[in-house]
Length: 279
Ligand SMILES: [Zn+2]
Image (cartoon, rainbow, N blue to C red; front, side, top):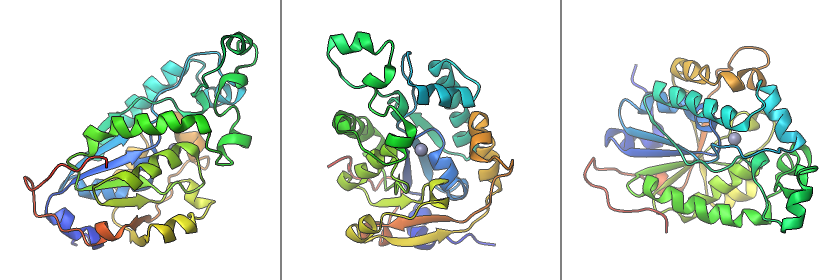
């Protein structure tokens, strides 16, 4: 049976270059794995993960808890293994993995006066931008100091998107600051943009209605084969128990939101690209 790619049909027929931006080392595979598994045989697909590193000790209590829940104490070892897991997962889907190496939110440090830096040896929360999960990350608080991350991300991303026909970004459902930082990159991209529904946040949160309205996004649901996605998600061994406490991966349709430019996309084929990049 022919797979239906809906509004992306012309892009798929034209063997488009697709770039999917992932805040963390698993978001794109968890949220878009079924679609990638089908597209990668017909298009050039690359997955770019932004926040793919940890930071130096001492860590906050929240960060130590994250490491311990996966059986780690050392953040460098944890993220090294997570990058390896991600490379396997993304390649399994037939796509090209890329890691930008920015520090994950619980490990991101503030710039502080020297005296405070010494005090932080006793209380690391003082020098981290997101000292807790519950009161900072889960509440969707975006640290003002992350302005520098926003600028550096856009710059690091430029070579990855300059020849892209479509760029996929998270809709940032649930408001995680790292997801919001990556989502907002879409506001300044020249290439047509598609937003994806962030799994597992989309199980418990609704999309930002104001963002959908402001960007005039139209939803599209992809309910194609998911066996390849299930195999790819299984590569994330360090995350599996936390993501799927019941031990099985739910087979759910994937939801995408298309900008007008993406909804009317016509790609005429390889070699017809013009430099797009970040505006
Ligand atoms: Zn994430």
